[in-house]
Image (cartoon, rainbow, N blue to C red; front, side, top):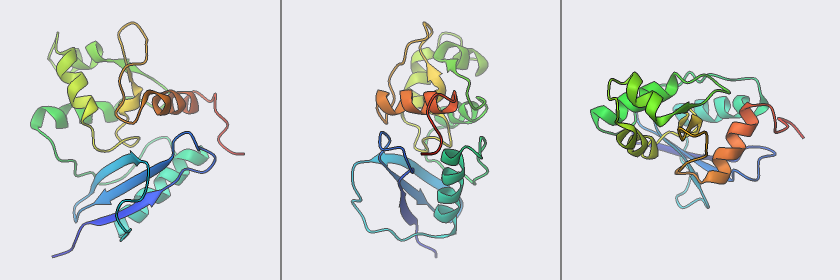
Amino acid sequence: MSRDTLDYYRPPAADALGLIRLRANATGITEIDFVDTETEPPHPGPLTDQAREQLAEYFAGTRRDFDLPLSPSGTDFQRRVWSALEKIPYGETRNYGELAEQLGSKGGQRAVGAANGRNPISIVVPCHRVIGSDGRMTGYAGGIGRKRWLLAFEAGEVPMRL
């Protein structure tokens, strides 16, 4: 039985984002999350290597869509929300109400927001692209500063290279 793999990635020229932890099991990526420090020793594998490579391409401005096998742990509803997030195009945003309606859960903005906040695969499953119905930045598990940075980056307002 293969063990889960773990690695870290620090986006170049993106000090505002800090360190990103990558985890995978035998079937896919299980976590991409912002962390303050390396709390566990890395033990990378093919899937975490692939995630590092695709994140590097994203931050270099050469990748807009990810092609990684994903294996997030969550309820059926959470996985439906996360699947809907993957369909939000690079550089665009949606609000919680639009996502709820898209999922056939009109009036379910709070439930969508809760599922969005539990997304374990940041950036690749772009929960940062969801905003409030009035256009305001709303909660982001990685912090509002990171959400602002990612949205500005995708809008071309942050230089991709030094």
